[in-house]
Amino acid sequence: MQYTTLANKGVQTLSPYQAGKPIEELERELGISNIVKLASNENPFGFPESAKHAISTQLADLTRYPDANGFYFKEVVAKKFGVAMDQITLGNGSNDLLELIARTFASEDDEIIFSQYAFIVYPLVAQAINAKSVVVPANDFGHDLEGFLAAITEKTKLIYLANPNNPTGTFLSHQQITDFLAKVPEHVIVVLDEAYTEFTDPDKRVDSFKLLQIHPNLVICRTLSKAYGLAGLRIGYAVSQPEIADLFNRVRQPFNCNSLALAAAVAVLQDDEFIQKVAENNRLEMARYEQFFQQNGLDYIQSKGNFITVDLNQPAAPIYQKLLEQGVIVRPIGVYGMPNHLRISIGLPEENDRFFAALVKVLK
View (cartoon, rainbow, N blue to C red):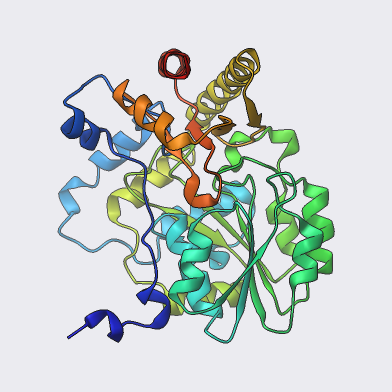
């Protein structure tokens, strides 16, 4: 019996998401230690102390199910961003939400629009539910919003916009998104994926929650895996109109966020000092990366995230492998159609120094 034939057509040919190589795996493979991981856009400062304290208060109650509605988490999000609690949907990271949104609104008769060089989860989700992927060619590695508008048909159900975009780091301004939303038909749901918004300059960020008041077809997704340092706990949230949030909660798994994640999220969302420290390190070290690439004659894509993508002008896979041998893990992005590029997460100064030295050695 070929059980693959029993799966739905999209799943039969689906390739699973390839995560960044874990430190432990490289240790096993090469027998080396003192490894620097700059591959998965994780927080280089580690787990926040505020989150550790919050988790310690929950340990005695782990035999109980978590609060399925995440009341205290939603309360903090609502207060921090000026939204209503019934607009918030819990997610097991924002990936969970990106899939949840697609399963709620799209089917095999529908189309989902996203950009070339956009987050790989978008096409994976579309294929898994047998929806048609409509890929709009990128404009200088970023989103071509006029191309998005031209691609809309009566079958379009969803548009995914990543801002900043992963893996390129490109950014759309508040005015660009405002003008775009004004032209999108109301029957098309626009998903604004803001996983990296905390790394953009505060005065340049998109006021997405204000836009939500004007455009009821907008859904905003955020995660606590990046700036907030909770990648291992998997928690995120979506904000939408209450009617849409109600639909999501009909599909959402009832306990998709665990007790420890909820407690940690409540704490770090109020830990402004930690977030400021993370953002400032990212700003300073991003400038060092740009200077390093300029000094070494390498083209890079200006990034508003906590990572930067560089063009090596040669196949990146062999360079990636040689960097692994130097104990430095970065991310090759050939799967995005960028075989000459590497994406590097911005680390602490000493971690970035390791990368600089290793890349110079490898490229000699």
